Length: 526
Image (cartoon, rainbow, N blue to C red; front, side):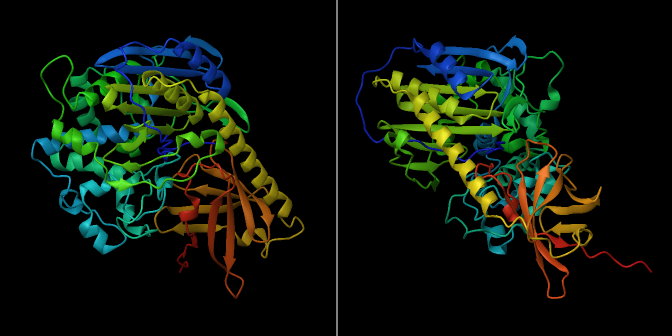
């Protein structure tokens, strides 16, 4: 399973019992090393980095395991990992500095700050504010349009934002929560529109430099051979292995930052100190901005949890500005997850305890960081220990069994004797989607291939499934396979095609379901 910015929808596991306990001294959990080692072994994570900030002090900033399978080079506190959607809080903080300077307001209409900004609905185009860009309530569907940058595409940030006008809403404006990445890209583009400085340079100059985050960057293209960075890992056809770094430059403000435990500890210190630097009287942003970024904006749905995690049932869950909010044992938590190909991460703040936790991994295993997170929270909250590794492993295993069962059921239910309605060559054509653009289906060696023209890695073989449905088997195996079903006109020509991911565990950024492919009209030669 590949993870995008969300790669991440937040799983706000929340417990409902409030407990009053004395303050915890600024020390590390005594069993942390052993617990991290067990989590890594259980979930198959090659390398990990952990940072803990307590009462203004960095009590842990260290690495575990290796940067790359097959290479003994260890992870240390300066080893960089992709932090994915934890970038969103950085983008929001960058905007907060401009609010402090009076150069913009959270409630400025976007079109006034970003000329040419247009959504599908003219009303939404006019009414959407910068605040709306940051709170996942636009009316767009979950991950809608992510295929414009994931897997890597040739579209620029400006081109991606332009295509928002072609994306049909899934719900009414400001009525539902649905996580998105494209509007964070738009939020990041407001920075150059207002300042004349790119998002990339602004983050380097106004956030990394003053904080001393010297081992952080905004692009994997900045990596040099022999540098201190972790390699991404994913299960490819069931086997964990290193994969290629994902180029996320065109999605920068939504999830392109790479950082390490030592630097993320500085970021967490700043957050817990409400924008004030811990080593001098300077500020990155005011306390007023800090409180705004931690204030609820969009209510998150709260569903039932699997039995192994039932004690973590939420009382409340909200999305703020670049942060998610929830409760655990009567305390307010402020956090975010992040995921890009081969990396997942977690940042969690507990203001009441003056506590911050960062967990970075080089494999796509959310159970690994969640088990460490809750074990660490339980230690600082003086709670009896719970075997969170076992609990999250139970849930992960069940999810994988359920997905395998669903795919097996689909396989057994298909009509293997059916045939396509048309000769294969009749399906070969250039197709267009209103927001993605051209997708080419062609004949090759007696079979059909499919390629997303602006996504260099998305080339696959179409294997007949049943009737007029084919299965796209991508040659790059970190891309989730998809079904494509053709609809015919009464005269037997192709009217359109729809796609959907094959696996129930496919990351939502493979938003195949949002595509509607129409055969391109090719002008006749005169």
